[in-house]
Length: 118
Length: 115
Image 1 (cartoon, rainbow over the protein chains, first blue to last red):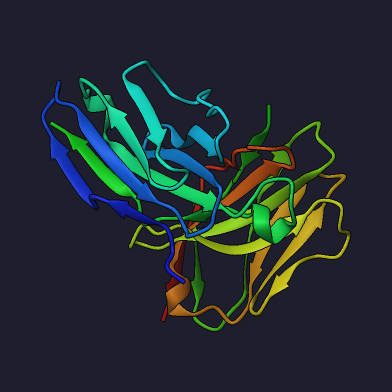
Image 2 (cartoon, rainbow over the protein chains, first blue to last red):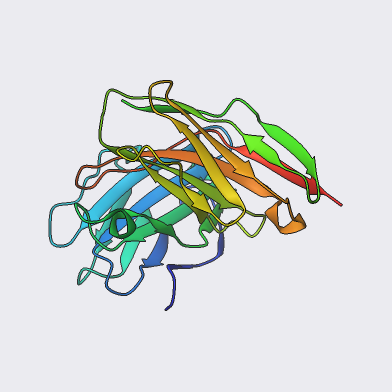
């Protein structure tokens, strides 16, 4: 079946503008994760959604970052008033379930969105 | 908190030869997974292999195998019969077996397979 998809593939924006990044998880996957990959910080966890539960926002670096997941499927990561340090690749991953088998708990990644803030 | 360390920023290997990538981790957890992910220039993070901490047997997937030493907190990846398509960044990652556990990644090893 189709894997995790993300859009746009690349985004260039000006400092101070808002951006929205989209993630479409694998069909039927209930868990969805956002990570950020930057040169200085490596790969960092941002936020996690599981079904209809409240999201785990513990990795969001500032209140300029927010995310939502509509209908338990598609997720949007929004960055307000972008700064140059927000430039990074934003990766989305999904897994079938948590507290299940190893195969079902394994996270599968999308191709990422490369964000450049000028 | 967990930490994952990959001490080899870059490695190279000749095509058809064998290479081993190192990874160490630190955790007080007893129930967890370890993963190796591959990230080629296309940027897609691809799962290479998974190891469950409760299993003593080392995981294998075709040309890829791991050496999991739980007491030493070591988790190395061996690639046999290296192919040009194996050229990529390789990330070692840790995940607790708890609901909503995130992956904690090492800094990565850039592997170049030379013809």
